[in-house]
Length: 203
Image 1 (cartoon, one colour):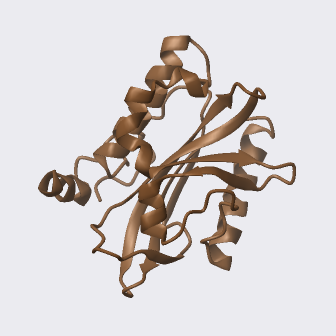
Image 2: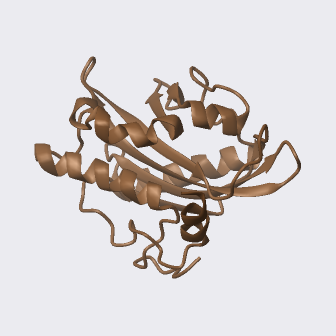
């Protein structure tokens, strides 16, 4: 990876960058801090659908998947729709997630809406250790006017046919940010990302 400061571009996959672009463009178009699901056009979301997840926070604060894309299901070896987000995590990863959420709310207030970007490692069914990138952003669900989250996740290594992730480890890098403010300076493409070469070869 390239720069590691809090202002240097950090996103690894061009597809993650495009997903962020879509969300911020939808927000700007409707002149609101958080777009509704219908503000993000289906044609715009189409290239991301297989790797998209949607999450709803329950009364106890835990996030449950309301949608788990087919690409994610293949990568994780199961469809996690209806299950809690921490299901594929080991105990250390769950504890780290709770810590970063607590730190965010302590810094910004309990009503603040977060954006969350992570780099994580996972062990696959073949024993390989791979890395994947995830970006979660809030949206407004018009059916009940609740705030939910839409996340795009992508492996930064090509998986072999039939290979899936069997255990997710603690995030190697996590950045939480207030999603209702301006787009962070670092939420752009890292020009030194190895994923640029991998995706160029796959395309």
